[in-house]
Image 1 (cartoon, one colour):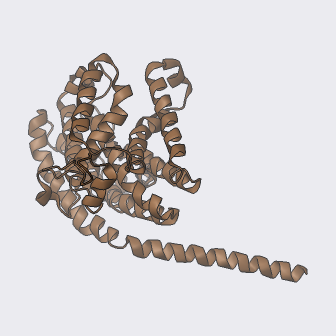
Image 2 (cartoon, rainbow, N blue to C red):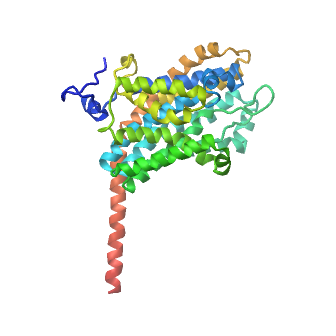
Image 3 (cartoon, rainbow, N blue to C red):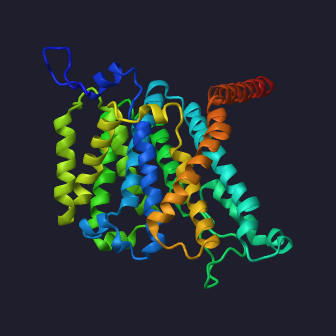
Length: 388
């Protein structure tokens, strides 16, 4: 049961008051993230049966503006912006922020990339082991560890002999890292403390986002990477803004319902670009701060990142090992439990152990940087003294 009324004379709670009431631990975010990751998996399962994206019901309903895969990504970016902003706003320690983000993203990514090269590739390739491991293109796959993707493994091809993309979804990690970097720069320049300046940054990106949607000439001029970054940052930035202005924004069930109603009403008329970044982000944050069903199933087990990283290689394996498997929902019934099991192993043996060490690592980095800074200052003083 969600309570949205403040103790003060029956006023509606703000997001800040709601955060205080739940000790700054959103009870619904884990459920939303695993649901969003599952939606991405189902979206890609449908791609096995329906090559035409227009078959996607949301793509059809929105007149080609969005599909379920992008909807899930928008949810991830909005949640990320809301959840990573507090620590940076509180401490303004960019080293802590960067080290924590690195330790959340890269350990599991490293395991998946290496496992794909060393285990998945040899099983699926048409090459002999000697040819596979001696192929120089194999080692280009390591590029994925930088979030700048390389999609193929030697000899892993479809029935027509065309290379198969091994793990397409990881391309979005590059833009997530860029969002983190933008937030860190905003902190360094004081935009998080002077929140009106951060709001200007968000409005600027929102304006470009709208211009991209309604002015094809602008989209043709700007670099593709910038366009994609803006498309995601409007959701990430809105999530961050909702936290920064949490003392001014109501935590309201009617507002959340109204946000969904606006999205549903706007999409068929091609107006999703206007309402989606703000309305979807508000609705998702409202749900994340609410007590949703299924909390016991996901408590202390954030499998969403594992599902996101692992499901595509699982689907590639199923499509090559069982070429007659074309029905999307049958594929989903097989792929989902396999992916959940592998995600649980990733969480248990890679992600959770790494996250328990994030404070130790950030403290070590801070001490090293302070020591390096002190050594530089000491050397500079010694040089000045010698010159005197």
